[in-house]
Amino acid sequence: MAGPSTAERGARGTTPSGPPPRLLRVRRRLRPPRRRTLLVTAVAVTLFGAGAVWLLYGSSWLRAERVRVAGTTVLTDREVRDAADVSLNTPLVAVDTGAIEHRVRERLKRIAKVDVSRSWPHTVSLVVTERRPEAIVEEDGKFHEVDATGVRFSTLSKRPKGVPLLEMEPDRSPSSRHFGRAGLRREAVRVVTQLPEKVRQDTRSLRVRSYDSITLELTGGRTIAWGSGERGEAKAKALTALMKARPDADHFDVQAPSAPAVSRS
Image: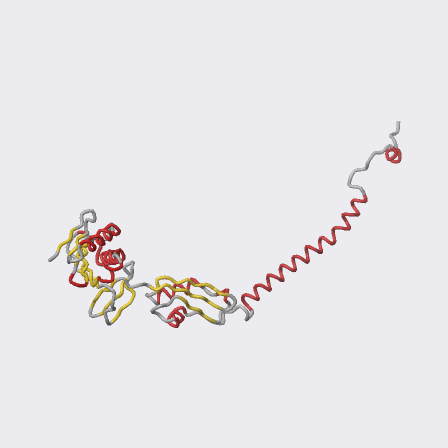
């Protein structure tokens, strides 16, 4: 017996497979605008990127035209600019800040730190931190300034005022051989930074014989046996108490800060 015809199946409510024709028409109407939107967006992004690259590298609007320096005290701004050697009239974005920092620190030993940045639209900014002389070393009639880390950074023909002189007289002890002159110099400068401010101002020189044998000579013929830079805070407190209790004394020993000693010659 023959099965029902297509018309009969339709009459019985059988739904044909696939989306309804109306939905297909809606989809067809939506597809072209969506493609156009994607195309327009892609073109816009490409043009924006090309414009940004041109603005940063090709235009004259964002170029390095000046170098600004801040933080100098002994050095001049011109000395820093010359050491930086920034190529002007080049794209500001292409300025190598790391290379500038390296040149400044390499050419100017007085500079301990330099921060290099771009200040849009036309400026390269350099903020420098100069080394501070904590002591001086005399060699061959010249005076070499030494900072808090023991770095020698400047040579002078005359002894500067207010900076103690390091008299390096290392003995033959194992500690002297172990640390060497550079290590002993760093330890002596460490002692200078630990001194109470008034004592520091009065200190004329430091005699360094070994790591744990550092003696200070003050104005008025006074001396201080300090030892090493270890327990510096405790030694500074003990020294302050001794000087307050015995202002007439001329020798102070704080090598053992828990048992300080004082005497008068």
